[in-house]
Image 1 (cartoon, helix red, strand yellow):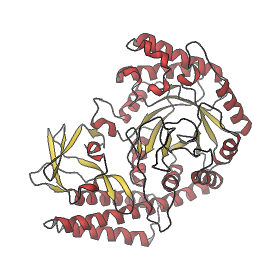
Image 2 (cartoon, rainbow, N blue to C red; image 1 turned 180 degrees about the vertical axis):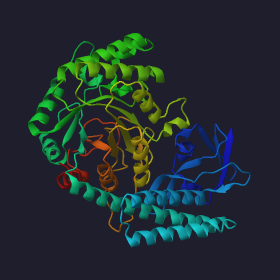
Image 3 (cartoon, rainbow, N blue to C red; image 1 turned 30 degrees about the horizontal axis):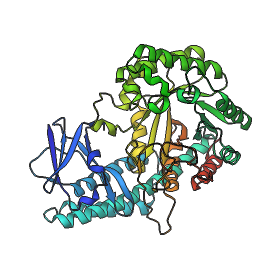
Image 4 (tube, rainbow, N blue to C red; image 1 turned 90 degrees about the horizontal axis):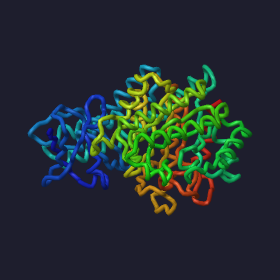
Length: 494
């Protein structure tokens, strides 16, 4: 088992609970099974291979909050690394690489941002050349990290603005942006807001929502929601038809645990019934979600893939014209560090493409800042790197995203996840959900490969999965992010 060792000036820099989320990855950025622990004053990171790799650490950055940061490629050696310095080295290297790509694509980089990146590089250089004084080196490295994160976010904003403007000069942007609804029809006030802020709605047609009791199919809420979308002129995505975790499974299905043959027959029957009912009335079939992480009745990876393949075939047989999407949660694959799974999200996608099942695109689900069950916050430019990786598959992408507006207790949240909030470096405090979305959404809309963006959670007033992730609060009042969505739709989208 390979081992990397690190000195850290301040252990509190690693986010609470983050020691178990540290991992090492190779050039493909797919995590290796990793274990991290303290040995005296050293952080020891062990992984299943001896190859050189980059270490990923949830790190508290001054003035910004906790981010998953990445070192440059490190080899095994006897002398411990100074982690603060290596994370600064990795971040600045990745920013400069991303900036080179953007400038090659035509980005005009503001001089002020080049100067700020240069300042961050100077602080890193001072840290790298003074490692014989660890405390001084750590102070300079963390100053470099803070400056680099701030500069990177400003660069992302500049790139997104220029890329969107360039697209609009050619033609109106055809990206679809909306939200996934709850099983119950939203109240009138929410519906009015959504008509202004969205041009697509995802209807919940998971098995548990339709057949809560065995043999008793309840279509009322879905029919009402579909009728409202059609009247309002909103496009409709239906799904996921298969939500591959226990939240999408009717309680009575526990009787079939271990009987894959009957389980798959019943699930495919549900898919067939839904598609037959709504064929010709939806614009996108979200066939399956959380294929890579779902714990549905303890199905194996191969069994999950078989179910998705069968579902795709059924949808294609009934409705060969409407596009189909299969989605994956936690697309960076952090869950691979401590779970016995063979396939990363992109490996699942590659298997489905190779099987030639007619899948039209892939979805990436990112619930940012939640632990467990979500994805650690990352600098915004890392989302661009992720899009580049998935673009190589050659199919369009759908992004399903959310983050919290508060870290307070949420009595209606069904998932026991803690919300981690980013901080604003502005003198005026900003809603953390709004700040995150304002940085990320323009970047996603600027990517031509991203054809659909869905906010994962509608309201905090109804039972929901992640704490405070809704567009509307516990009183069904719109949060500041709703105005952002409305403004983006009016200024950018068809």
